[in-house]
Length: 64
Figure 1 (cartoon, rainbow, N blue to C red):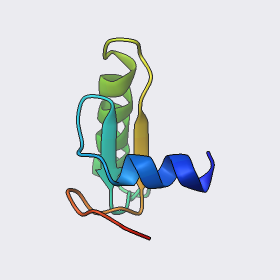
Figure 2 (cartoon, rainbow, N blue to C red):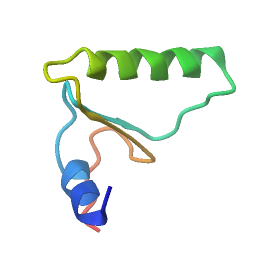
Figure 3 (cartoon, rainbow, N blue to C red):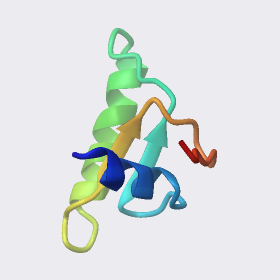
Figure 4 (cartoon, one colour):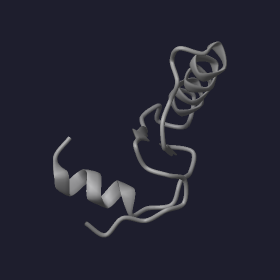
């Protein structure tokens, strides 16, 4: 993904096809389950394509 597309996504609100995660902890079972749940939710949404952006806090907009 290029910077322009990432910037556009980060400036949008979360929804059925877009989810922000500040961090994921794959060392914990709860972290793995949360990621799997989010991937499944996006995959099962209409059209089946979406984005999970890691490193961005929920509902925080970046203008960089």
